[in-house]
Length: 110
Image (tube, rainbow, N blue to C red):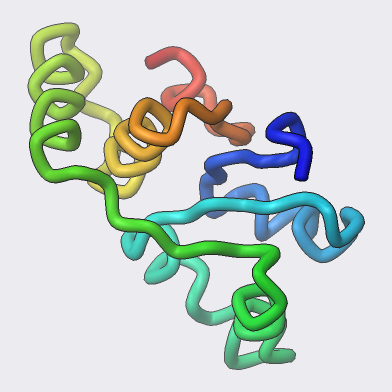
């Protein structure tokens, strides 16, 4: 699988429906924090479970040391508007060396 089809994603990507509309060769990595944010999608059409079952969405916990470093850097830079979920996907993107797909301005600014 081409690594250009792999992304770490924020919850807003799911709200816009992108993972549901792309071909099966795309893989989206999320953290448990992002899963909590989008869990209500499961209740409607069980779409999130379908994406997880087919391997199109992979839930991955970022390394705790990397996550602590990201939180510290965000605090040092005054980016207090970032949520725990935002910090978790930044850490995961760094850990997996994958781009982050998001339409969140605060996250993109970080």
